Image (cartoon, rainbow, N blue to C red; front, side, top):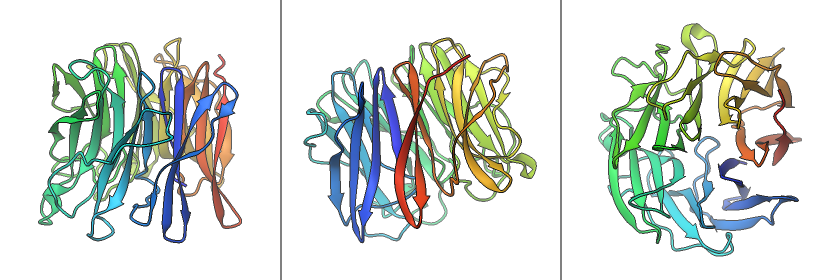
Length: 359
């Protein structure tokens, strides 16, 4: 269960969870020219937290280093867990002693990690963003978005707050533009408007959040439906789900200035979206978008190509019967890789498919 895909350049890496009774193993494999590499364990034990939305991630960095993040129990309740981070310099055969990017010591939620490769002043290192619940320890605070930087040796070089009030359990996403990292996430206003916000790392500081588009979705609880972001140079594409008016819709918006501003959103779905969007910018400036759509009471994983001017290709169905699955999408050379969970006769497995974008 719990697949996650990440891509850096021509390297696509997938991680997932295998569970037998109380014993949990996080595994990973790397995409090669002939298929998937040998599956290798990252971490294993009965202390790992399992969550279909808040999943482990393994990210390839330039130079061959792999970075992994996963959840571990911290002695609190089911809504309480910590993040662990580890590095591998030998293609995942061995991993460094795990460290924790947060140091508050509270028995609260720390999860939904997103990893990106960093540049100056920590060239060769990486950045990590996560949702942090330390302020909720007294039951009156809000979930926040925090970030940490690690140098090329895996040593943490700082921790900061990006946003003091965000949606509790919507996955976030990061990408790297020609001007630096960008993060997208579901924000949360004082009157429960939960639209998608963006922040950029500029001169070592995260910019104040700006809304990608003012949907005005007011919802009292977390929809567990986060955004996706992809970047190539200064071109950025963001996809998200909204339920304004009780109607599910998937949207995408494009930026040509590294995420400072975004154009008019493009409707992605065919009329009955349930979300779980993923997006990847393609070489010609268009983007591939995947999402879950409800068709005749059956959930479908669909994929289509969209352009900033609103032109869309006909969508194709990748798989059906998604249930609670959170499908993933990544670049794979000149193509795309999709991953999702398939439930067959009560057992689950991770399936993947490859698609080649066409006009």
